[in-house]
Image 1 (tube, rainbow, N blue to C red):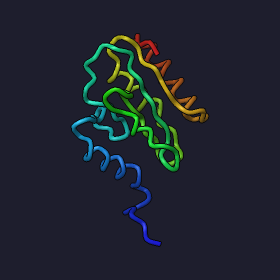
Image 2 (cartoon, rainbow, N blue to C red):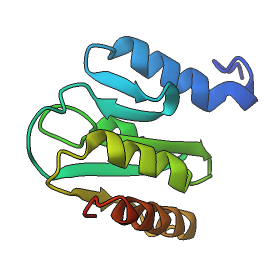
Image 3 (tube, one colour):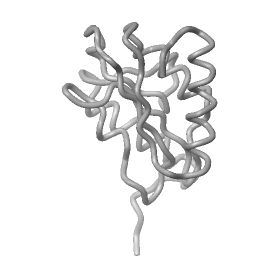
Image 4 (cartoon, one colour):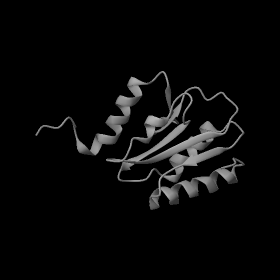
Length: 128
């Protein structure tokens, strides 16, 4: 069986690069990190919604980011949660002063890192 993967160690970044190229009119990177994506139209004063999770066989959380949907997504490695720093950077990027809601799965790494990011955000005055 043939695979359409160049190098398994680059799988996540190449996948994200392809998604960004296909949707660059709708998505932005945060601080140049391709694993921290937000929607371009973030001008509305509203509660922002951020999701995230590991890559692999789980649903691609990034697919929920867009107009009328979620505002940002932190993408982890294969079967790895995104870091609390990634989540925190996205939180700062999407906050309009109305607070940020986190949506994530019941996975130990996600719970820990989203909770840590919430503490970091609240220390900066962002309601989570």
